[in-house]
Amino acid sequence: MEKTIIIQRYNPEQDQAPSAKRYQVPFDHSTSVLDALLYIQQQLDPTLAFRWSCRMAICGSCGVMVNKIPKLGCKTFLRDYPAELTISALDHFPIEKDLISDMAVFLDHLQAVKPYLINDSQNTEPHRQTPAQLKKYQKFSSCINCGLCYAACPQFGLNPEFLGPAAIVTAQRYNLDSRDQGKAQRMPQLNGKNGVWACTFVGFCADVCPKQLDPAAAVNQGKVASATDMLISIFKP
Amino acid sequence: MPDSAGARRPYLQPLSRSWWLKHSFFLRYMLREATVLPLLFFCGCLLAGLYSLSQGESQYQSWLAFMAQPWVIALNALVLLASLYHAKTFFELFPRVMPLLPAPLMIAGQWLGTLLVALFLLWLFGAIG
Amino acid sequence: MNQPKRSDEPIWWALFSAGGVCFAMVIPGLVLTLGLLYPLGLLPEAAFSYSRVQQLLQSFWGLAGLAFAGAAICLPLFHAMHRVHHGLHDLKLAKGPLAKVLCYGLASLLSAVAIVYSGIIA
Image (cartoon, rainbow over all chains, first blue to last red; front, side, top):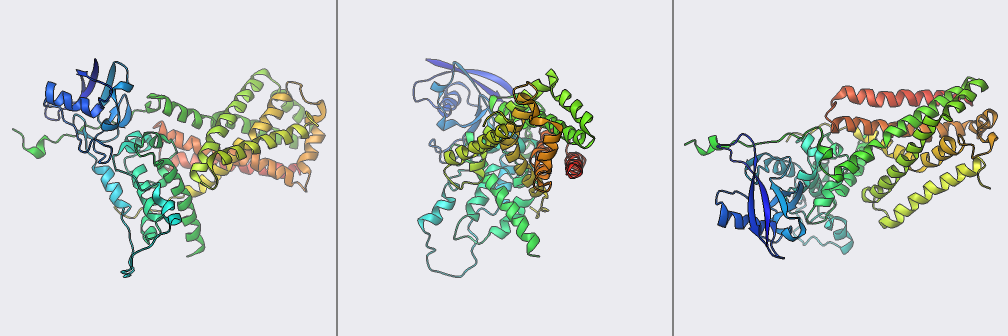
């Protein structure tokens, strides 16, 4: 059994814009999109460029658009698609070559929210955390930085300065952590017009997230946090 | 041969104005956003009604006659549909923004609110009770 | 990244949210009775008579009229103009301060008119 894979190819040394190329790929019940790309690269066209590493939805590097929906190649199976499927690089990011995007904007935004525990206390004791304290941020802590939510977000497509879903999820993840004291340093980024307020709750990020951590909810809970922060700033000069 | 830095020529496809036609998820989003257009019409009607009320009985009667025109009734049927679609989306988003109680409970509670207001208005204007 | 300026969006978002609640909970019943059933003759003739409606809006020292203006006109208007404002950005039709001033300015102006007339009736 074979399926037709149409790939948007782009060679920066030759092409003005991406163009479609068709490949016939054999498949069975367990063939993933990543398997298909590896087959094409190894058997049909060694010039095909794409990123991958773990093959088990942990590393977050094989994100591509499959029929215009952002997907992890390793977690998406040919069996679920009709005879033809179209694969292209993630939307809203500059394409370096073929399926490889330049993720620098996303990484800059992630860095801007200080995605690490900030705690100045010199306490060398273990920071104990109750199950209730863990539960507050745990659902937002499984982000693998694959960038699918950015490819799903039209607000990021319209305004690349928008911090975006994953960065705001991560800011919320640390803000809600009982061991963290860095909220005051992170809120100014969320409070700006390119922070939580650039979101209009399209909600597609939550649909495409391979870890189902509902980035849209995190961003909109961030709006409540930002509005509260504004109220506090008014009453506390 | 160009050097490696010179060979870098990233391609960025700017988002087209018609991005929301790309698939059904975005279409449903735009439909949700567009529910405010019928709402604006209804707010305009209410504002005109309030104004006519302050101008005396004959003005108010002609406003009631305007509200009974077939095209106005048709648009108001659209307002009702838009408000219900808005309610469905709004009620489902609320528990995600403020997760106070289990989501199904919060959604049911909000629909109950809509129902109670509608029943109160039906009672007030004499259709029931 | 530099520290960005605090956005004033929380104000418009709060009004949008309050208006969204009104649009979802008050408007369905109101448009059903006033916009559909009454014009179709399915409610008693006197239900929306001049004296009845005036009396209703004047009840509770005119607070009923103010509540009506707020819940059925002002807040829904802010809800609608917030979505129009973001919709203009979504459709790449307008961005920047002018669209914002026009959208929220219109909502504020019409809200003021609604409140003034509800006061005149009371």
